[in-house]
Amino acid sequence: MTPDAVLAHPPRVLSRAQQESYFEQGYLLVENFIDAAWLDRLRAVTSSFVEKSRSWTESDDLFDLSPSHGPDRPLIRRIKTPEDQSEIYWEFSIGPIADLATDLLGPDIGFHHSKLNFKWHEGGDEVSWHQDFPFYPHTNDAVLAIGIYLQDVEEGDGPLAVLPGSHKGPLYDHYGADGAWTGHLDGAAVAGLDLSAVRHLTGPAGSVTVHSARLVHGSPPSRKADGRPLLINAYRAADAMPYTPYPLPGSHAGEIVRGEAARQAHLQLLPCRIPPDWSGGYTSIFAAQAGEGTKAAE
Image (cartoon, rainbow, N blue to C red; front, side, top):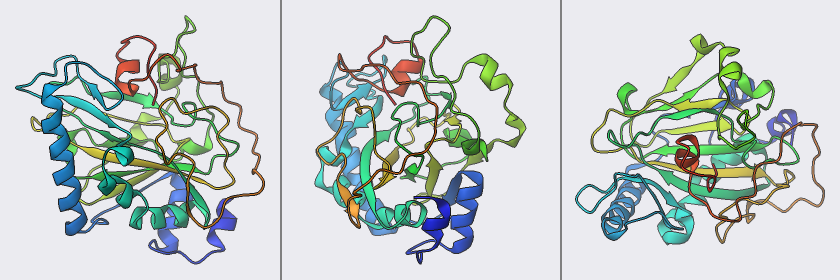
């Protein structure tokens, strides 16, 4: 669905100015969007998984672990498919943030995937500049990700960094010169960006960030010793159809969470290289950008 078509519908939770800003800049920061009751539930279930990870020794379909993870210092980089690990995460995915997604994608939306990323001071957790779309291309670009800050995020905590307006530019190659997937823009592409325009999206717990799948974004390393959990949910307009499989889809992947399923795909010319075949395994963007083998995806 095009921005004009989205704006023809009355918004549910955003203002018209917020909608227009998202379409112009490719991102949005909404402070204090999640109420205290939801924050308490999400923090509690997330803490329980951190404790559970103490007995894990290697990454699997539940956890992506930092190489320095251990029972005395659990360093999870990601909880995978959290919507399948606890009903609380799924209930949240179809709650108020789904209404937020409709204000930017239109009344008919599908759930794509969820993940919960952590940043630890000792975890080597910088995320280089990249776009989401090359990881999971669709027939059009009405695809976005919503991040939820479960704790206060300040400048030194590895906040989301965005390049405003870059969603209107090209889809960059995320392969290296040797043909291997790197999961980020190469040096030449980064050199062509105006990084003076980068914004770091800080905010109190309960704030949400939204970014287009085409937006160039990343995050600096964290200097916060106790970690920074970021719950991310990705949605698509119902007429934005994925044309490559997501490497670790949850049981709710593709489920229509607002409105109705599309009877026809909206086709948009978006030249984009096909991502790798990850059928042999899956870890995370952290592993891909760290060069920990090929079993990685966004």
